[in-house]
Amino acid sequence: MLAMNPAMPSAWHAPTLSEVLKQNNQFRASVASGECATKEGGDCWINRTILERSVFNYGIPRKSRLSEFNALNLEPSLHDLVSWLGAHTVARSGKGLSYLEMGVSSLKNFDTQVNFFRDNVSVLAAMDIEDPNPKRASTWGEPTVVREIPSRRFNSTETRATFREMLAVSHHRAHPCVRDRSLCQDRTFLWPSTRHEHHARGNSVVYTTMDQMDSVAWEAFAETRFSTLGLPPFDLVFSDGLHTYPAVMKEHRELAQLKLLSAPELGRDFTMVWDDCFVTPADMRRKSRHGAPSRVGDAVVGHIAPALAAHLRRGLGAGHSVTFCFVHFHMNTWVGGSDQHMNEVCLFTTLDMSSLLASPPSKVYGGLGGESCTSL
Image (cartoon, rainbow, N blue to C red):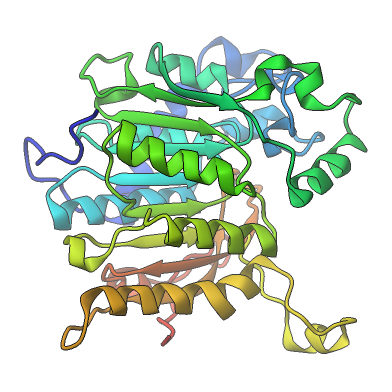
């Protein structure tokens, strides 16, 4: 078992978003440098060989230029905001962060967080249907496989539908498990906490391969986290996996039922972030065949955020109160440089967001400036 969330050796600084951007860009620049940045393709974060062996191309559009990953963000992106949220959680608690990212793709964002929280004994967990991108995971050292069970990946209706859609543009025609026998197993990899510079940079990393639509996989995920590794619930969750209404509803039910979310009664803040949080406009909803909401934002705004608010209130009990903020905004995501990709984002948190809400928004890069918390 791991000794989780011990007190940090020194107080953690609560940085500004600009300070976060500067630190993260230094790390991104260190990855996107040298021979990989100058050769054709610019495959510093992931390469075509890895993508050809993947299941869903790590969620990267097949027409994407890998060199796009190398451009630095000119203003804070959603991934920098995730770092900011984690840093302020740590500063308030005085303990390491317990972080979950669902849908880690090439590991660009997740590896950025591993580097950002390198000195505060945090525990960072990744979940994806793909195995870890070896180009980045190899920089953490050699992992231990702490759990391995027969895979139920690709069994769920939602995932099979996504797989069929991907097959239409893929050179693969065989079922992933047939093409690559390693995909017949769900595994949890552990990079234990160490100060060695080549080993997860001073924190612990846990990576689980699984289908987020599979309840059995979720039960195994929770058992491994609590019973095998002795880890606490998550303080900060970033939902960036299967971007559909059923998928985010499923992940919320599993996180809540399996008690994987932190709460004020545990003396911890809690934050959850959703990328691609598009909400169906009311006029379009009226024109649809059934009039039912069907996008990620519809699930978050209509169901998940109110349920999280109720969960926090219920946990504290009568006579106690908790302050939280829910905000829906636009922000640049993972692509850097001048070719920005703006997405809709939803954020639920118990942290004080007043400084970011009061800051001026960027017309190009977005952000929380000018937004306000919604009552739930």
